[in-house]
Amino acid sequence: MNQPSNCNEIPASHSQRYNRWQGLAIAQTSVAVALLSALSVAGLGTALSLLQNREFVAALQCKFAFALSFVLFFTCAISCCLVVITRAMDFRLTARTVRKRSNLEYKKSLTIFRLTSDKYGKLTWFFFWCACLSLALASAALAIAGSSVYAPSFSTMRPNPALHPSAFGRG
Image 1 (tube, rainbow, N blue to C red):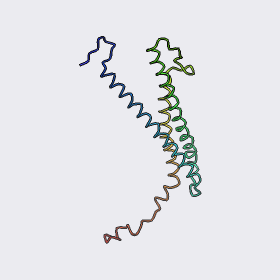
Image 2: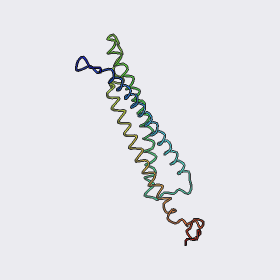
Image 3: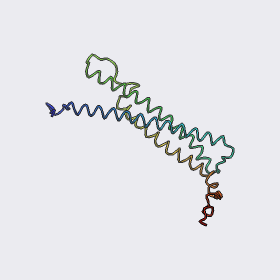
Image 4: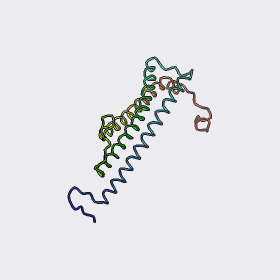
C-alpha cells in the first residue's frame, strides 16, 4: 500500500481517484446545465405557442403568471449561459495556477476581470442555482396559467361511450 512520506503528501492512488471523481463531477455539471438550457428553451417555446393560440385566454389573475413564466424561462436560459462562461474562466485560471506552481517563471495573471478562480467557481454555482430556481418557478407559473384555461375543459368532458362500463356489458 502506498503510504505518504509526510502528512501533506497524497498517495498516488488517492490522487488518481480524486482526478477521476473530479472529471465525473465536471461531466455531470455539464449534463445538468445542458438539461436546464434545453428545458428553459422548451418552456419558452411552449409559452410562445400558447400565446399564438387564439383559444388560450388566461384568466385575468393568471395573466401575470403567464407573463412571469416568460421572464423566468428567459432568466434560466441566461443563467445557463453565465454558468458556462464562468466555468470556462474558472478552468482557465485553474490551469494557470497549476502552470505557475510547476513553473516559477510563469508570468500570466491569476485573475481575469479582477476575479480569482475561487470567485468564478462561486459565481458558477450561484448562476447554476439561479437557473434551477427560475426553471422551477417558471414551470409552476406556466402550469398555473395553463390550468386557468384548460382545467375547466377537463371537468366538463363527456365520457367516451365506447369506454363507458356499460359498453362492455358491465353497467
